[in-house]
Amino acid sequence: MAPVRVAGPEKRPEEVAAMFDGVARRYDLTNAVLSAGLDRTWRSATADALELRPGLRVLDLAAGTGTSSWAFAAHGASVVACDFSLGMLRVGRRRLRHRPAASGGGTVALVAGDGLALPFAEASFDRVTISFGLRNVVDVEACLAELARVTRPGGRLVVCEFSRPTWAPWRTVYMEYLMRALPGLARVVSSSPDAYVYLAESIRAWPDQPTLAGHIAGAGWTQVGWRNLTGGIVALHRAWRPA
Image (tube, rainbow, N blue to C red; front, side):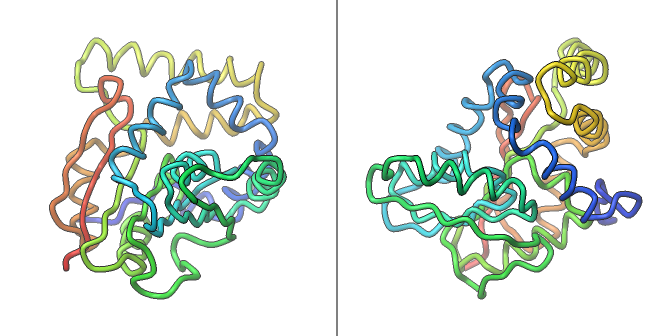
């Protein structure tokens, strides 16, 4: 199976990082508007799929401003929020200073890092997850292999990513929204609407659920499965690192 390459080679990683730097200030608000508030539902489903509990160490890759990371910490987990956009991390750090302590003793630490060369030792985490970020790496299988490297044997991966609606009429409606309405809405609410043209194009080019499952298995993960959310607009892929 050939490697998935969505953000390159024509779009270099530093360009993707700069794009996210440019949208960081209003990123979470824009996502809430463009998803009609469904981003919270998807975030909650990701936390449930991770089966979090106090004491677990979690890597949240492509964490952005840390919104998802904070939701994971609310379950008592110790979360490392890792992203290659320094602009996103700066916004996240400002917000973190004003947040109350997480319930259950959970914590969040924000760390700059590249998904193709994670700055962590082998078997550092009990859970690893990436939400809406896998499309933005140059080599998807290399990123998935890096996530496997830093996961302890028997640990779990959850990928939350845009996917392919399974019902043809719903898929048609969704693609019309994605390619026509989303860029227009982004011009109203986003500080960098061109970034959301890229978003729409990257979603359209992204593989379907079975194909992504194959890439996850190809990176060394086992027991790969997925669950569709919102009719397949988003899919949660789950897998385990072999013990």
